[in-house]
Each structure stands twice: as C-alpha cells, then as structure tokens.
Image: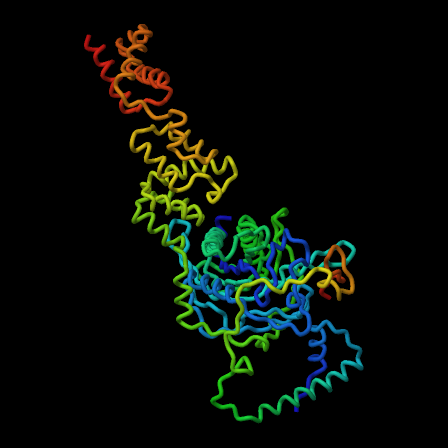
Length: 487
Length: 97
C-alpha cells in the first residue's frame, strides 16, 4: 500500500448541493418544510407540481443568500445572471425540466483556504456556485411502483463546485467541513447531512505522482455523512490504483456509496450531460446584480470563522486549541464574544466555557442558545472569583447551580452562604483546633514528613466547608506550622 | 432545407420517453424537418452587432419577497393524479432500458 501510494496521487473535486433556508420556494410562494418530517405533499403549489400555466418568479432572499455564500467563498459575483431549463424526463420534476443557472451562474472563481495535513494552508479553488431548484423525492416500493412527494420540489438550492484541487480524503474532509461551517455561519443552511439539507458528491481520479494529467474520473453520490465522504474517497482511490496496476483503465461512472458495506455501487444514470438540452428559461427575465446590491449584501455578512479565528489568536491571545473550539459553531462564538464584550477576561472565559460549561451542556444535552448561563452571568461569576468572594472550587458548583436554576451567581452565593471566609480570626481558631486535636500528626510533621502539610490544609478547608480563601488559609497555616517548628 | 435523420428522431423520442411505431417515426421525421426548415428563415436576418439575448422582452430583475402565499391543500394537489397511495403520487417505477 505505502509503495503504491508513493507512485500515485488522487485528484479530488467536490460538488455541494445546499438547500437555502428561505420561508418560501425558489420560484413561488409555496411554503418550505422539513421534507423528512412533514406529511407528504403538504407543501406544494401549482408551480411545484408543474401545473400548466404556472409562472416562476425569483425569490429575492434566495438570491441574496447565494450572493453571501459567493462573497464568503471569495468569488466574483456576476452582474449578468440567467436561468435556464435543464431538460430531463424523470418523475422527481413534474415540469420535465429543472430551472437552473448554466452559462451565467451567480458566482465564479473563488477559493477557500483549508488546513493541510502538516498544518500548512492549502488553497482550494471554487469554480462556481449557481442557483437552482431542488427536486421531489421518490420512494420505490417492492411491487414496482414508486411514490412521489413534491414537498422538496422547488426548494432553493445552491450548487457549489470546487476545482479538483484536493489530493487526499483528509483534504476533502477539511474542505467539506469548512464549507458546511460557513453555510451555517451565514444562516443559509442547517448543515444537516442525514436529512439531505446539504449533500456532497466527490469526483475522484488518480494519476502518477508528478503528473498533472486529469484522468477519467468517477463520481460518488449519496454521501450522507462526513464518514461516508472520507471512506468512499479512500475506497475509490484504492480501487482505481488496483485497476491501473492490473493493467486496465478506469471507466467514467456515477456511483452510489453503501455505508454498511463500505463500498461503491453502480447507480442508474439519468441522462448524459449533453442530453439536457439547456436553453434560456423564457419565463424568467435576466437577473442583473449591480455593485450597489453586492455592497448592501456584503455589509450584512457576519464575521466569518477565519477572521474570528485570527482575531482570537492575535487580539485576544487565546491558545489555538481554545480559539478553534470556540469558532467551530457560530452560536458558541457569539456567546463568547458577548462575554468578552461584557468585560470578561478572554482566556478565563474561554477556560470556563470549554472546561465547565461545555461539560454541563453535554451532560444535559443542551445547546448554548438554550443554556441558562448567559455571557453576562458567566462574567458576573468570574468577577466573584476575582474579588475573592468565592474560590474556584465553589465557583464550579455555583456554575452548576446557575445552569440548573437560571439564578445569578450572586443570588446563589448569598442564599447558600457560600462567600469565602477571608477573616484571619475564624481561620486561625480552626487551625489551632486541628493542631491541638492531632498531636501525633504534628509530631510526624515536625519529625520531617513535610508532605503532611497538605493533610493539615485539607483538614482546615474541610472545617471551613470549602469556603476558606485558599491563599489566606495557606498563609495562616504556614505561619502556625512555622511557629511550631521554631519551638 | 433541414432534414433530420431517423436516428435523430429516435433520440428525441427516447429523451421524451415516447415509444413510436416505424410509421410514426417516418411521419415525425418529415414534420420535425419541416419545423426546422420553417425556423431556419430566421437565419436570413442580418444580426451582425446584435448581442445574444436570453429573453424577448426588455425586462430584468423581476423578483418577489420571500413570503408564503401559494401552498395548496393536499386533496387539490393530488386531485389530478391517476393513482395515489399514502398521500403521494403513485407511478410505475422508472428504469433505464
């Protein structure tokens, strides 16, 4: 295996179909529903059903979402946009054609930087992104019939096509993950692969290492998880190497991926590309996107993961692990930003978020949006530690309380009497009692068992029910034990 | 004067999922050729300097806001279906070849 991998390299491109999260469909005011959960054909209208006489009208929000994605992927947004009919007969589209963009897509010539295997930045070029409508869903029955549900027909879809710039399954995964993250950041797509809200297709070919040939490629569809994406690519690379080493040639094919069997299978092909007979959609006049419109959309763009990451590393000085974990999910990053804006120290907030709040969220299966610990609530809790009102251990249990009850840190500390004891008097009394009650331990300690100092500390803190100010207790204990040693 | 070959007609029929008898193929070969010949008159026009256009009317940017207003009830949706099952259109499965 390692020998053959040194002789060949893979050439991988990805196509991504992402539904855009609009209220209504691409070309009509028909409701968009969760096409997995909703009752079949409960969200259809004459246009989704291809009724005679219907006329499509472009959904402005869908166009703007596509523009946002184009901008986020560093594409040129094209001024002249046209829609065309892609003709094919298949029951998933009752019109007999799909309205799509062909010669004049909304976005072209972009790129996305991903992290390569050894941490270096690798640029993957984006060939194009175009707007189209999704198709209906067919369920094949064992008696030879098929059932058709048109809820999904006409849902706005963005197809993003990369150049074949990836060389390994890991790079394809990094690219796919980042595309999904950006779509989620932009509120364009939920990123749900299982439901097919976002769908990936890989095209894969191999060539001798050092060659820049683009050989016959195999397309793999039906990838409904990132694991399927990587395992199907690895499987295809191995298959193609075997084919070529066996003296045969790789044949062009469109395959499906069987996740259970971990192998690709041949799919019925619809029709060859040259049979689609694209022509301009006579029912839709051209769409012209001027610079003003692009500027307005650009202004609405949220801070994207890459620039957030850069800001966390350089301006806030977060460790790269922390920064990456927080940037991963936009709601988490926004929670963190709000906490920092409320005056929280970035590193401390990041620590408490990653080490404590995430654990609580996992344990109780909650997201940061419905967590009861607000950014301000966390900052208030950290302020109590800073002011030495409570110590870190107490703060941890206060956080659990905040998470469960939704009360503020201050209320919990007051009601439960958790404020730390920062007066010398009571602490000194307790230290003296412990020393008096444990003469043997004192003798051992004075006899050279220095480690017993920790035992004394533990006893004192226990008597104080964990509320002792640790710095103060340490100082007073050292003072008392020091006096004993001198005697 | 354009002439479509018999293969052209068969290809078009296949793409349209039409099954034609030999007589029909001959008939449509003639009719489709006549249509093309008719449309060919357009090439007599001198269109030098006229940019290609996707649309006959000088309109652009006809859009709607993202609002829901045209969903129809399921009994209407399925009203014209030849066969239904489980609130879906029931059809003969489509297979290649």
